[in-house]
Image (cartoon, rainbow, N blue to C red; front, side, top):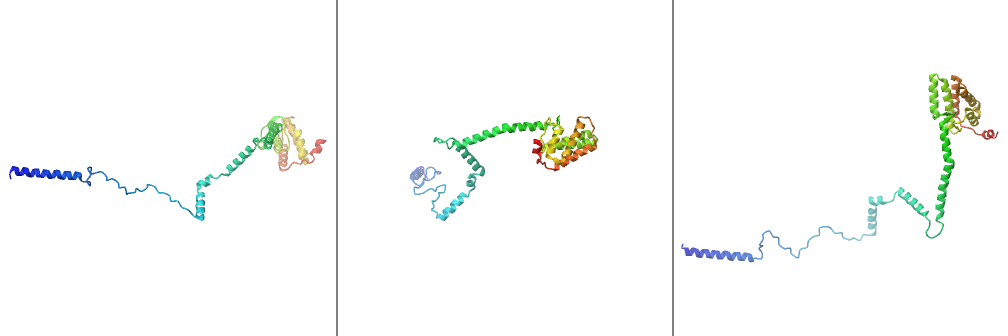
Amino acid sequence: MCACGRKGSISSSSDSWRRGNRATRRSPTRSRWPCARPAARPDRVRALPWPVDVPVDPSPPDARELLIRELSDPEYQAAQPTLLDLIGQAISEWLQSLVAPTDGSLDGLVPLVIAVLLAVGIVVAFLVWGVPRINRRSRADDGLFGADERRSAARLRADAADAAARGDHTAATLDAFRALARGLQERTVVTMLPGTTAHEFAGQASAAFPDLSAAVTAAADGFDSVRYAGASGTPALYRSIVDLDASLSRRSPDFTDAPDEVSA
């Protein structure tokens, strides 16, 4: 084949390629970018990403059931006031009622004045009667028959029994009589002060237990003889005081004849 023939064939092929390429660029169905997405059509509707509640119109029974179900939720139950809340609210309302009224009337001041007077009366009564009694009770607990004695009746009885077991009936007699007196003091049958003597105690105990007056007086005599006269305690004296203490512990005081003795 001649060169001119090949040249004509090459030119014809080149022209065909150019025409095809121009037709491809002019084609509306082909995109210049192969990965580009086609434009959305205007007739398409995009779905909403969340649900929409549809309004309903329930019947009265259904509405009542829905309301009961809603109110039975634990959150509503927890929001209800407790008993302490109601008590606190009542106290708060009462305190607010004590505030002086703003309308100029004096009716609202009456509860406030009464409350203040009661508070002042309680404080004064405590200062007049309460504090001296507490002081007297404290002093009485510290002293017994001229000695600084703080032991209870039970402790004194135990110490007396221990002394008797050791054969020390002098200490046993003294602690046994102190236990007898401290026991009646703890029962508020007698009043013991630091300066109260054994016979003064015996007089108070005899007024409360008239049928045991002789035994109480004999026990006081034995205590004084051992405590102040230097006599030695004996097992018989110790045992008589212990038996008297047990008998007094089982009885109730009788103050029927006490006013007559005081007046005499």
